[in-house]
Length: 365
Image 1 (spheres, rainbow, N blue to C red):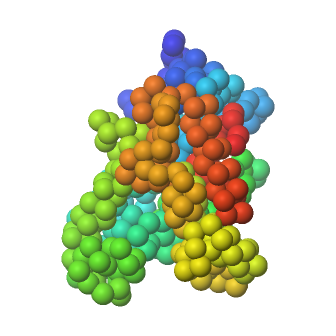
Image 2 (tube, helix red, strand yellow):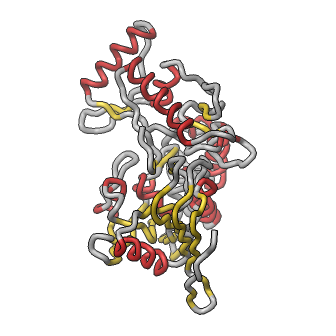
Image 3 (cartoon, rainbow, N blue to C red):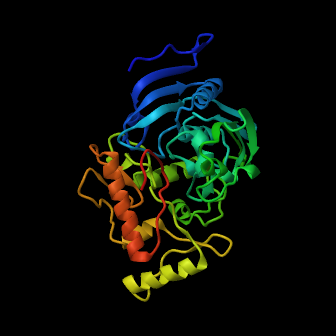
């Protein structure tokens, strides 16, 4: 890997370029082949320059942040991979601005230390700040769309930097305008409006979190306590990165929770009762517009895929059925074979087709 000469701004290196660069170490799955070229950019200007260079030359471009939601094929990426490694954490009262390359979990810890509420239940989620609006990241009763105010992004179509207010980001469950048009926007900065609640958390809304805290839903607790409780819950499911724990060599939840129409939900209930008995019922949560959200983990388990399922180097986590894991010697194809087996098994059992949450590159399910 012979690096090209880096660009510098004063004495600060803006970017580093390597050829035939391995990408597996940049993902939490630790899977995938190399990229023809890997650019690591540490400033917004360097990010934009790399994107423009790729667009001007017609070179395929892969954006990498924390690599926690990425499945790269074993053959790698035939183009330029751009790793966004920008840094920036700025608080002005309750207004927070994060550079896209900031570590999200670290940023949450810093907001809690500053006494600001609104993202404390998103503690421990791996990856970078710039990825949070793309997936509309959420957990334990909070979504980033609830506190996000603006996204600063490079618009590849217009060739300029734009600032998109939250209302123009198209947020929905694990979805956004950025995910819908993945080749258009490159997130540079994310802005939030947090809350000063006197050292208390936002109202606790998730039932499991409330139980763990010993409070009723809607109550507030000390910010640090909320964060520590969420971290413990996540760690118990193998959802906090630990190099020594193969249950964390994953992308977290591999499948999103299905959102069904009324007719689809009625059919699911029928098939569940047919398979599991007349008193069985899948979890159901109203999702607006007559739609119902159910639990992917519940469906996976009831279809026969239990914790630790699998005999090869890719298996279901021993701690959580939604996580597919690399036990240390897996290939991407091993992982995808397991994902297809789970997806097809759930569809055959219950008529619901699970949708993968991680982005796939050079492969498909």
